[in-house]
Image (cartoon, rainbow, N blue to C red; front, side, top):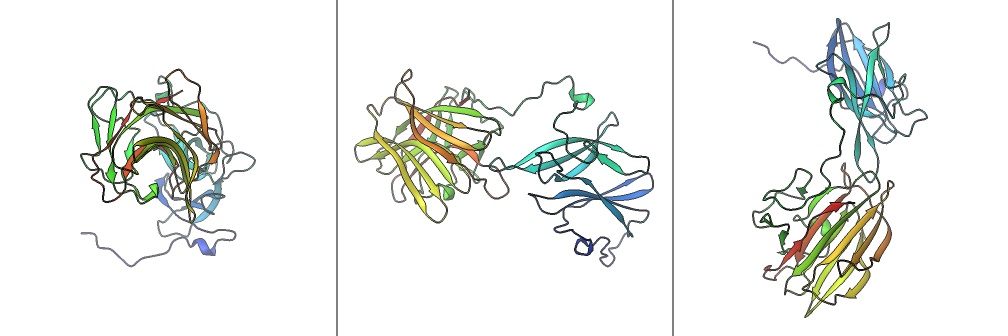
Length: 338
């Protein structure tokens, strides 16, 4: 029976010259060597190191095996060495790319004549490379960007901000996602759990949907939001007997600001909403009140921020003020990335 022994420090990052934040170690064994792959230097500007020893307890010798260099791939680390079924060695790592979060990269890996791993292009990330053998017969694709809501369950690209209640969403398979106006809106969507989101795309993209707000409680609002530490949205607000199209932004410590507001000519007709984003995370929010009308810009130049350790996201939401019955709903049409 194996019994745990006293803890032993085999590599002390603070004792290594120029090192900081040595974290996330992975332990391997290859050709009689024990290997520890560990990132250092922090997420934004860090690097990947490898250490080896003939004994699992050390002493270990180490070197940097992947760093940004002159490439645009900053902080390449926090990954793992993997071997494909065909015997190919690869290194998975991420890059911190606000507001898109931690973007995954796959680097080729081979071993030099002294038995050390060589990752990417002699220790620098490659931007293009043939894919693994097993993947060459599969066309690379992003996770699903469009959703017709013609099914009775959500696609894998969607997620909630918190564990959902069963009555938050109804999917009847008729092309409409019906979200219930939960009465919990205190004026900060960062605290609202019933936002149905998906990651903000890292390439330039347009995302469109339609929205009809079926609500009588004053203050009920719904829309298309880009949500991170800050947020912005374009959508509809019910106020007394009127429905308005609005764009708002939220800044931490400052709260929400109304950036655009105009009455909706016919609340019974769905309003089309669109958010366009660049590869730098700049977002433009537009709407139109007729299917073939001109798009009106409600908010331009919004720069999204990531949330803690995650990307900013695009989401659908509806919420009502506390104390209201919460009987309203938002009817969202198909979501499409154009």
